[in-house]
Image (cartoon, one colour):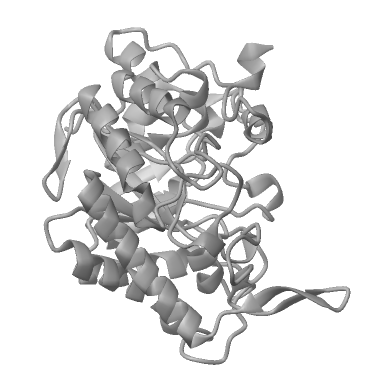
Amino acid sequence: MPVLFEPTAINGMQMKNRFVRSATYEAMAAKDGTVTDQLLATMAELASGGVGLIMTGHSNVTREGQAGGRQMGIYADTMIDGLKKLTATVHENGGVVAVQLAHAGLRSIGTGEYGPLGPCNIFEDGVKKVSAMTESDIKRTISAFGDAAERAVKCGFDAVQIHAAHGYLLSQFLAPCSNKRSDNYGGKLENRARFLVEVYREIRRKVGPSCPVMAKINSEDFLEEGFTVEEMIEVARMLEKLGLDAIEMSGGTFASGPFIPSRIGTSTAEAKEVYYREAARAFKKEITIPLILVGGFLSFASAEGVVTTGLADYVALSRPLVREPHLIQRWEHGDRTKASCISCNKCFATLFTEEALHCAAEKR
């Protein structure tokens, strides 16, 4: 029977337990996306806190793919020195770290020469706010993902993760509600998944077979004409056949109402934990590559239950580790009381302050 505190490996990447820090936007980089001492300190604390695998916050692979201020970037060689410091810091503190490669698409903040790009044009009051990507834009972005992955390997990252969830660019292409294209990147699922598939192939070409490559995808979007559980399984099957090493399952977008990725007020009962239980069950019936499950975990019992029953292979947490970076170490040492996170989402408001990501409820 698999247990949470046993060593495992994903394509040769050794992990001391089955806990993952899910990618969490820290807003701690410099304005140009380079690593700062503040970000290094956060990574050191997470590594020393016992997490088996740390996913960095979403890191933009192009300048125009930036989602927010002080977001860590990986789009230029000028970032290499700082990123090397980050991986060294994690390793020195006993951790393993993957970089999440991302592009915000229509959610970008408009930096760079291209402005916000997405599957389709978006107009507000007759003014174009988002430009539909041309096939040239798509090819350029695919290359940027590959270049970023190659950069990650040079910097010492143990793995890379493709961000294709939460309504960011690759997720936008997967969803019929945001992808109304009529070319090879729109319409049937095979076409809507083409961008993600080509990104994976380019990354694999650049990093070779021995580097773990993972993807984060939605269980479903919880939107009318959104990405569905059935489509998620089909896309997972496509990626599995191509050699993807693991999938992290999340769900929802920022437009999904009560079903946003980080739901509010779910800390009151264990029954409200494990948001995507049924989707994970469907996934495990069809897909054999490891499943990292995120969404609502606050209690050790819930984390242990999904792993021991085979519902998932790894458990990922985000907000609980904002408040308690050493939560996993606490659980390992025998204090199995619930995480102190109250699922209030006030930590996200701190992203727009000079202090950046921290638990506002605890500070109060």
